[in-house]
Image (cartoon, rainbow, N blue to C red):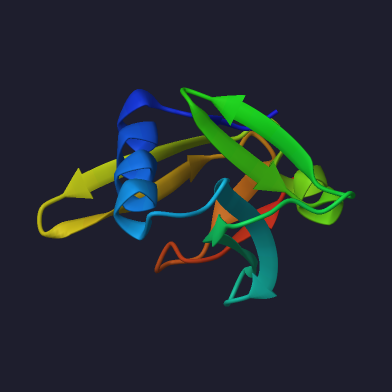
Length: 108
């Protein structure tokens, strides 16, 4: 299961309203960075038969089967720190993050 905080849902809904289309957001894991994996977020205009769809705080979160294995139980949030703002992930399967915080490894 993937969840999103109230603040995160508010930001996603704001973006979807400004976009004026989309069924939700797609979260996926890509192989990249110095640690191995990175989170990706994009707008979803449709779902695929192999997708899993979660609804949390009024937001549809769409995840493909491969990514779900690496982020099951994750909570997504929107965080502002100084002049930086963006989505963050609290993933119970995450082991370590690289120094810049852009990629991560999984627990074995």
